[in-house]
Amino acid sequence: MKITEKEIPHLIRAGQDQQVISLLYKTIFPKVKKYVVSHGGIGDDASDVFQDSIMYLYSQIMSGKYDEEKYTINGYLFTLSKNRWLNKLKRNKRFTSVENHDETLAESISDPDFQIVDEINKGESLIRSIFSGLGEKCIELLTYDIFYNMLMEDIALRMGFSTVSAAKMQLKRCKDKLDLELEQKPEIKSRLLNELS
Image (tube, rainbow, N blue to C red):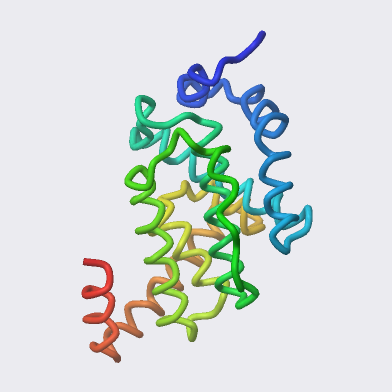
């Protein structure tokens, strides 16, 4: 059965997504890998950002936030992957300068369309800078939960927890740490509110 790009959101919502995943890997992943490798990454980096982008795409489709009239799946997924890689480079301080010569691959997406992605990236960067004391695992867990609104099953799988219950328990501990940090440092809370408003 040949799947068209327009059918993909419907198939994902209907839980008939096995062929969708292989189609996305076959058609879009090579472009993502080429981009990541040509901008300082390796194949594993490309796999990581692509997998994260697929999870984000799924959450947007399942929550009804993905606008099928505005976006194409291919352009959306490529641009998500590209943005995630650029943000990873910035976080790792390996970012120097990147030419923006791949716009044609995602030409169906305009800047306003990616305001949501920019807001998420801004919030994620802020959490990393302010809450570095929470530890990398907590920051990653909170980011997936708060900014990507991922299902606990997906978080458990992505982060290698043995069970969903273990992921939930760890998330609760991380949220408790976060609450304590905000309680002890009210200036952080006001900074968060200012930055994200």
